Length: 361
Image (tube, rainbow, N blue to C red; front, side, top):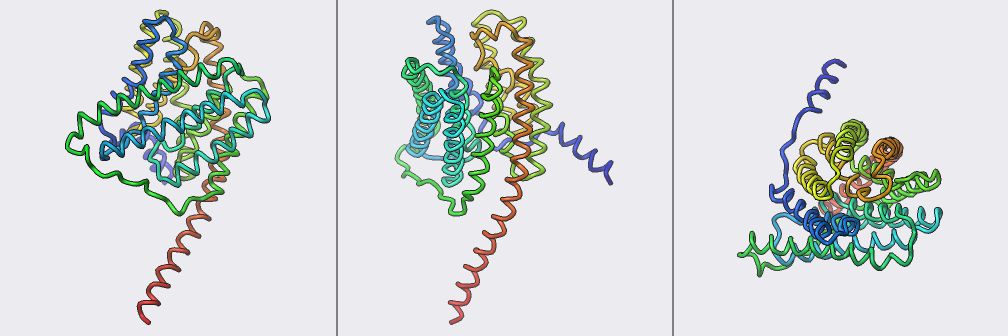
C-alpha cells in the first residue's frame, strides 16, 4: 500500500498538468518585464530598469474572459495596490520592530482583501512580495520618491501593454458593461491573521540575524502557504526546496559565465516566459527557473552579484528558513480552515432549513 502511494507521488512529480491560462499570458509577462530592461540597458541604468521590471509583474493579474473596461479597471486597481505595498515597504524599513509589524499588518490586509474580492491566483502574493523586497532594501529616505516613481512607471508600462492587448483581442467587447467584483462573504479573518503572523516572523528573522537578502524568507514562506490544504502546503514546500536547489545551479552558471548586461536582460526575459508557461503546470519545474530569474531581478548590479557562491549559499539558507516557517504556518492555517469550513457549512445548512421551513408555512 505504501509502495503504491510512493509510486503515485513519484509519478505525479513528473506529470505536467493542463494550464487553465491563455497562452498569451507568458509572452505578455515577458514584454512587461523586458521592455523596461531594454530601455534601462540602452540608457545605461540597469538597476532602475530592474525595479520597473519587477513592477511589470502586475500584468500577471490580467483577468481572462473579461470586457475591455473591466480588464483595465482591475489592472489599475492591482497596480495601485502594488505601488502602495512597495511604498510602505520603503517607508518603514528603518527599524526592525516597526518594519516587521507594518509588514505583518500589510500582509494580513492584502490577504483578506484578495480573498474578499475573490482575486484569482496569484492572489495577494505579488502585493506582499513587493513590500517584502522594498523592506529588504537599505533605508534611504532621499531615494524613496525616485524608487516609487520608477516602480510606478513599471506598472504603467504593464498597463499599456494590457491596453494594447485588450484592444487587439476584444474589439467587439469595447462597450461591454463593467462587471463588479465578486464578493466572497465567507472570508476567514483568523486565516488572514495567520498569514500576517507568518510574514511578520519571516521578516523579523531575516532582519534580526542581519541576513543579506531577508526578503527571500517571506517570499518563500508565502509561496508555500499558497497551498490549498495541509498536504498541498507540505508538497509545495518540498517542491520549492527541490526546485530551488536545481535553480541555484542554473543561477550559478548564469552569474559565472554571463557577464554582458544585454545577455543578462535576455536571460531574465526568457526565464520569465518559461516560468509563466510552467507555473500552473508543475510548481517544482517552474521554481527551477523562477529561482535564477528572481536572483537576477533582485541582485544584478549589486556588489554581492560579483560573488555568486556566497549569494547562492545565502539564497538556499533563506529558502530553507522561509519554507520551514511556511510549513509550520500551513499547519495552523489548515486546521483553521477545517474549523471555518465546518462553521460555514453549518450556517449554510441553517439558512437552507430556515427557507424550507418558511415555504412549508
